Amino acid sequence: MATNHQALWFPPLEECPERTALIDGETEVSYREVCTYSERLRGGLLNGEASLDGERVAFLYPASIEYVGLFIAVIAAGGLAVPLSVHAAPAELHHCLDTAGCRRLILADELRSDALDVVCADLSINLLSANELPHIAPAPPTLADDQRALMVFTSGTTGKPKGVVHTLASLRAQITSLIGAWGWSADDRIPLFLPLHHVHGIVNVLCCALWSGAAVSLFRRFDAQTIGHQVADGQFNVFMAVPTIYVKLIAYLDTLPAEDRGAITQGFRSMRLNVSGSAACPVSVFERWQELTHQPLLERYGMTELGMALSNPYRGERRPGHVGQPLPGVVIKRVDEAGNDITDSDVPGELAVKSSTSFYEYWERPDATEEAFDDGWFLTGDIAVIDDGYYRILGRASIDIIKSGGYKLSALEIEAALLEHPSISEVAVIGVPDNEWGEVVAAAVVANRDFDADAVSQWCVDKLSIYKVPRLWQITDALPRNAMGKVTKPDLRSWF
Image (cartoon, rainbow, N blue to C red; front, side, top):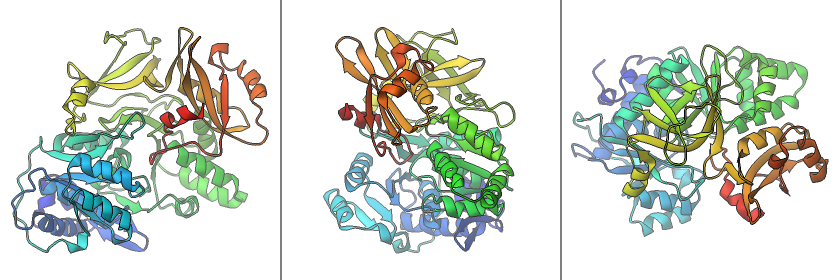
């Protein structure tokens, strides 16, 4: 097989041409077909030019051959890939497209709308589908490790989403690090239903699988019944999801007859790896999942800016409520509010990271980029302690650390305790300003009809120190969440 130009940045694509790369319903796409298709798209993007010279090319596709082809082709053409959320509101798309300074948006025909037309007209952006790109044979590309390759946006839990730019080198480092740490191989088969505008879906699933020669089954959305049937049929041996998905699967399994439930749990039990990430996995969910499937979830810690930094071991103890140890090539320390190193493992400190996986910049935000680093250490904003060598995240410094009466309280710790109560299915804890205490603990809960705030407060006394027990309660049918399943806690402020 002749050398494919995409292979200059994604070499595994040409090493197993006849293997199945993608499964989309009844359609199977080989690695050769992915190469051919992405090369055609590269020619169309370039339209006779030698390079895109860092042009930010946005695309709006669900999990599909078009998405995969565009992701590979834009980078191979010397552009900066900007994958956007298919569930984003027009105003959110406007912010991302404006921030990135995109000149064109490539999208699926079914995702076009009058509102999106207005957004693109306002920003002078050309809309077209992948099929509308011209068919022009491209010249061989010239790629460099330090070229800007991928822009993904932060979750926006603490402010307007920022465009996080990764280079070809940092993207490669993320992929190869996880392949080694989690034992990826060409024999792996994984479902992909996670959003493809965040590193969890893009890197941890799609890129790691394709880089390994594995097969990826594409889903437009998560459907417990459909995926459950395929799990029971033994179609997958790796599974990666956010905690919310595991909660939904547990609830679905509880509705099934014993025989059907047993077939699905046996399917999970036969897998080599189940991973949970993007949000803290409650210990109760970890334990229930292990009880059902005999799979100890591998919980890890990462950020848009870093890819993955910490992970429970692939082989070894996976400790519930903990995110493990630094991955190979990642150096981590903890610092206090003044930036001083913390050596006492029991003292909470902000995680500071140095890694080859680290991002290059926040797009056109030099002030924010500079503020994010201290002498080369990326300041994550996440507070952690170390329990016998395993890191445990207490929460975000600005959101999940509540300063009340001189104490620093972990919202995640309080949430974990509350989830043990039988009437509570979901919970989010925040600090609410108070003149006397500085902040008081407030809890928004999704609960059944048996919930009684006074009774739960009394129950908490046996689980939590009295100053950690919520003083304010809000009952709701659903917590506000972003596309990755993270609760958008700033939205809760107005509830109290």
